[in-house]
Image (cartoon, rainbow, N blue to C red; front, side):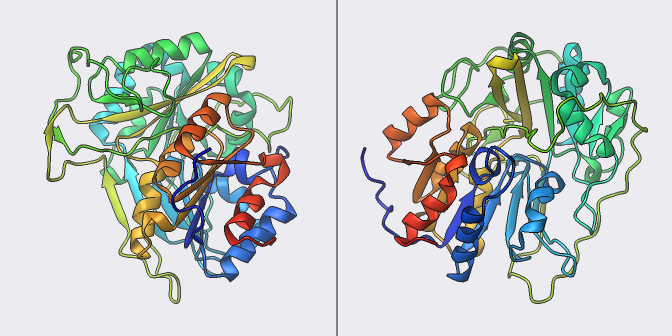
Length: 408
């Protein structure tokens, strides 16, 4: 296997995925992995957790660990970045990207056949770091209870049922969703993905199979624009890839009851950014609606959305995550590193799945867990990424120890 050119450099920032990477199969952080995180922080290394979970769902696991309040959590696959915070030090919002209202409304109409499998996610994190009712919005319950029932039960306190779901999108841009998700059988989600990809401004990434039209391997010939679809403009080339995080069921009890009807959306508005005396030096928080063109533009449809499909064939389950175009773990990590004056060569990225590819690609050193999909491990070998032990064998600790060349 070829060596990564920067593998022998001690990293200044370590970006770590959660599910299937930092967490073992029991959904917990092992003592050895936790000791490695503490050792890295004691050495002055920025430790960043990057996950597809939304902030509050990730904090269920991270809050008890005792990491520094100024440590950063990249959540929802790069749409939101916050500090962890603590009971005495409120979490600090760093960046947040929304789906534009027009795009979200178009999405609901465009996937009308699949709206009984649709979930909208809103960032409604309060000062205590927890979500409010309405952070997750659905129109129908039966299909979702059938396909992801344990996840639905675990998230019941945050789910609001809104019919029609478009009613959840009223108000200012501050109430726009940060992402959407479709769940169902492999065959049904393949049809949903194909339906979305009818629009030239929708791209699929995260898996180089080519089954999704435009993928990491390169663009396919875009189909004609659908009637009523949002208009096109120009975009900057080189938008970062986006891939999806597996939703986690490790903290859900088998056989949990199906979700009953939830109250209508009515959660509080987004909290104002709290000051954080003595905290990390970040620029003023950044909130964006979609991704806007910059200089050096090319003539292409605006990338309205980026899709990623995660499949579980043994369960006949497919999850299609739908995020603002250009959002990814890799893009969020690069932006954060820049605020600390850290070049990509100083980043160590550790992950296990296709949603981690964007940050593995941008890092000076990359480690893939041995529990990763076989086709992703094949890609890792061609890229010179190290394949370390699995998540159940303290792969994160192994990667950090190797970076420092000493046990933690």
